[in-house]
Amino acid sequence: MKKHNYSAGPCILPQEVFEKSAQAVLNFNNSGLSLLEMSHRSKDFVAVMDEVRALVLELLGLEGKGYQALFLQGGASLEFLMVPYNLMKVDGKAAYLDTGTWANNAIKEAKLFGETVVVGSSKEDNYNHIPTDYTIPADASYFHCTSNNTIFGTQMKSFPKTDIPVVCDMSSDIFSRTLDFTQFDLIYAGAQKNMGAAGATLVVVKEEILGKSGRTIPSILDYEKHIKAESMYNTPAVFAVYTCLLTLQWLKKQGGIAAIEKINEAKANLLYTEIDRNPLFIGTANPADRSFMNATFLLVNPEHQETFDKMWKAAGISGLPGHRSVGGYRASMYNALSLESVQVLVDVMKELETVYSNQSQLAEK
Image (cartoon, rainbow, N blue to C red; front, side, top):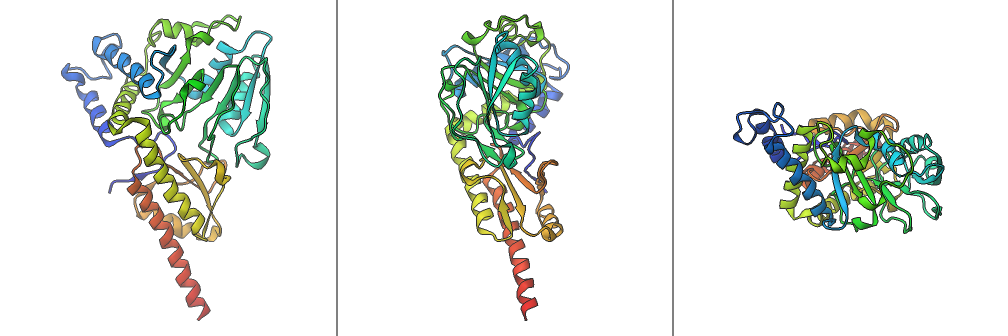
């Protein structure tokens, strides 16, 4: 049985990406070599790197606008460190919006480099909403936010206007919705959430913001050095980069970000409608801030958990339990998850309601 994969990451990818990447492991471009054994300096892989970097800028609408796309390593967690290393001025400060676990982890790293101002936080409310009405210091080196919060199921629907550089961790909703991406000066995202295999990290940076920190940066952590080396300063994660290329090629064939956004909205609306309608379930995020990528919800009665778990597993659903830190359930609906898979989950939720409704009626008799 084909699984309906709701894993938050590593995530579901299009079937054709699995098939093409599997073939590349056996024989890449009819070279007689596996992608895993060929030189990253070979013309075949250099062509992959060049194409995927260009395709990133094309899909985001950033071609010819002073941006560079890099495929690095270390995940978003290393970017928590690289961002302040490259952007926070010596004796300067940076502004951060605290909307969840990963935003909080980014704040911890920034504090190692200088004054880190948390301009807003929803921590006291268990991160169930996106903070508003905050002020960004005009003298900060940059403002950092996290667009989507996988653990708590919230998503920023708009972004503040400011004259300082804006940095955004888009690990879990990159390429999922249309935005004016020129409002960001630096975007980073771990590939494994919505873009490809684990091991690669996408960084999209506006070149003009670099080289102004006044600090000495270790070479491997210096964005300018990675740009100069065309994302080949060290051996890249060749397989992960290739799966990103295949996934973005697939996305372009679907009609790009605008087309996939409509599908993502349909999936989210289908599931959230059922969560709100079904008396056995309750959503955990503020409705206005609900994520289209990660829907988080609970059973009203914990005694129903054993039955519900058996039902969704029997339906071929995988990866539904919530993050270990919060419990409940989390349905991650990344680009490659079909509307049909969401319907399967909704049908199971309706079936659970029917089961307990019938039991209640029998008990009353």
